Length: 474
Image 1 (cartoon, rainbow, N blue to C red):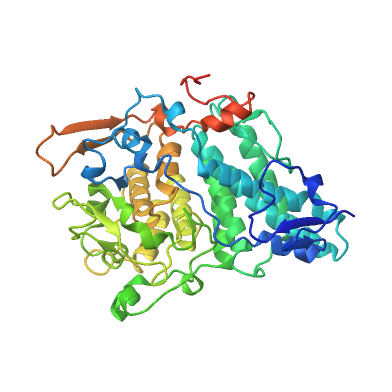
Image 2 (image 1 turned 90 degrees about the vertical axis):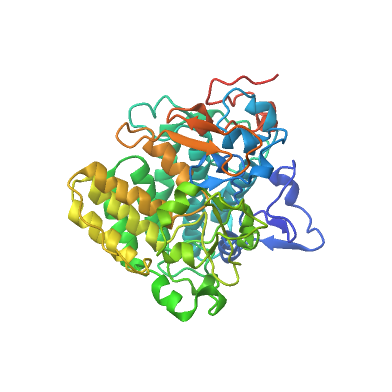
């Protein structure tokens, strides 16, 4: 059996060398990976980062300060914020840390999946290591396909361009692009292969639990509009963890300034992964929410009142009705990329709404709102139609699943359904009176929702083609 060596300061075998180069000598300061337990430990990867800067301002939940737009040379943030389809995004996106990091993590999972069976030791641990790596491999493919491809549409998914599926460790591979349907098939197979071996209580918080695995399974089914399967998976996830952190009680205790709730103390968190790193919320003044979302929160929502600043003269444009996340991660941990129990409840509510079970959908929403709304109307009334009930669910998702990928992905998937598609309008600037105010519009079928593959990747892999009608500059 060949051993694998990983330098302790690197994420995993970064560079252009192949796996074979790590098999003969032990570099100074390296860790030898040769037992099933060590492969299992390799799954635990704190501080995984998935930057959202290639698309974050396409979301109707985020906003930019006026000084960062007016008079500035247009960059990808400004182009996205002003919904400008006329500019060559491909040449601007020369690289993408999100793309590179997601595939680096996939290579890590593939290393475990490919090599753990050849290690000497407990077969149960081998199966567990492989299962955990498969869940994370599936999750990374899910993030990638929902960023770089069209939202899943059952009518077109078999022909819509997707991403490259990486199912084995190969730093020099030039894989062909799969369709959206093929990527989802791959994701679902990894999930189903892994589920029988995932543990209810994993080794640490950086290993996937059964509650997370079933929550992710529910999310994939929901995005595919497989509603009955999504509901069953959501219910299964909640059977392992159905806890909701009570923000109403937390508010009575004094909130984050009085009582710190670090990551390990937030009972609703199912997985730990981040936009940039575990301390990303220290820098959240750059995460400004839009006037639309600010208004949606109202005045009695603990999710806004406890954590946001709407009065700063340093980080906000006064009079814009915007706000920014102003709570350090050491005072309250808020998951932005991973999953939490409240997302599972919201998926369950959506399944009920889509199945015309309006009472059940609103009951779930009200269970969540009882832990979020400080005063006034806590319990929502039951609407008479599916569209109105879905609107309640979608609005609650916006309030609960802040920042990160969720709203951008929701817009993409809902835009494939005429009943829920949204044309976003953005009036800007709101405060500055020296430049003309304009209304910017983003149509549901805009190509901006499909992020181009980074130019550096397109140059290295001629088999990879864009999923939009944009031109490659070479």
